[in-house]
Image (tube, rainbow, N blue to C red; front, side, top):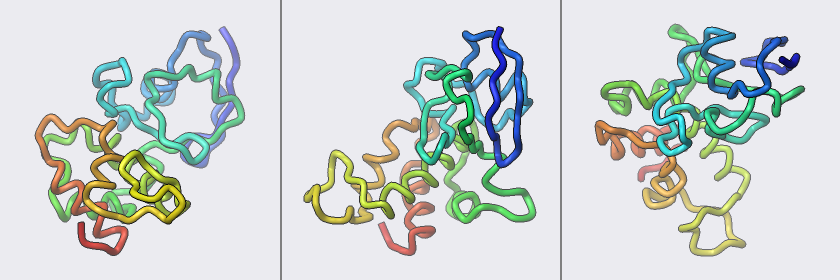
Length: 169
């Protein structure tokens, strides 16, 4: 057992947990934040994507104790039903959720993707590593490729992210 303290959605959290507890399980089981989903539990589907210290990660692949003093944002921390985050609102508008299981991870990843692009971080499909990345469909699809949608709503997801970015994909 170990004590871990971090911020989750802007609130201080102190947990006494088994050192083998993943961040995903700490969020779902200890903090009852069930928006983050357990899909494959092997880091292959992206359903558990959250934002930790400004970077998107698969919460099933990291231990909660590794984030002592860190800041975690889950889908619950992005917006509320009455005040949706722009990415959440765009997912609703463009039907980017379908069954909804992957949606929390998709949304957290999309929020982080937009910040990566704004920061000028290139991806594997960036044509010029020294130039700011272009927000193209190929760029978005590459950056979002770690998030699997079993319903196949990919074009709707790209449309939603593109709208928030103020561009057409």
